[in-house]
Length: 162
Image 1 (cartoon, rainbow, N blue to C red):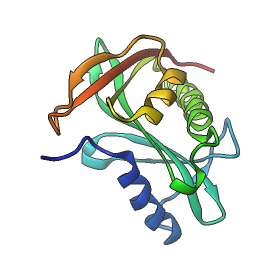
Image 2: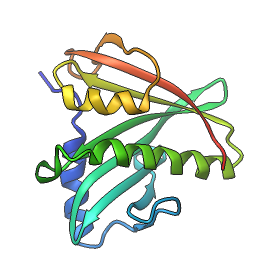
Image 3: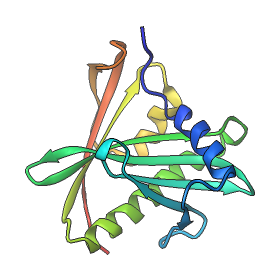
C-alpha cells in the first residue's frame, strides 16, 4: 500500500537539482533568508520556498495549485526539514514567511483570496505542530486518498495583498 505523500521526497529531489544548478531560484522579496522558485509540474503552478545553508537545503515549503473553488485558487501545502536541521523551529518560521510572501505575490496579481489545504498523517506529530501555525481551524479526520491511511485535513482561507 502506498504511503501518504511525503514532502521529504521532494526535498531530496530539490537538493539534487539545487546542487546541480537546475532550479532557477531567486531571493525571496519578503524574506532574504529564503530562496524562491516557481514552476508548472503537470500544468499546475507550484511556488517553492527554500532555506539553504551553503549548498544544502534545510527547509522546503511548496504550494501547489490543485484547483479553484468559487474563483479562489486552492493550494496544497507541503513542507519538509532536512534531518540535521529538525527541532530548531525552522519549519514553522519558514512556512509563515513563505505564506506571507505568497499572499503578497498573488495580491499583486489581483487575486484577492486563496485557500490553503494540507493532509497530514495522524502519526506525523511534528507536521501537525507546524500546521498549528498555519491553520486556524481544527482539522477534520479523513482517509488519505492516495494511501488509504488515516489523516488530518486542514484548510484555511488567506486574504492576499501587500
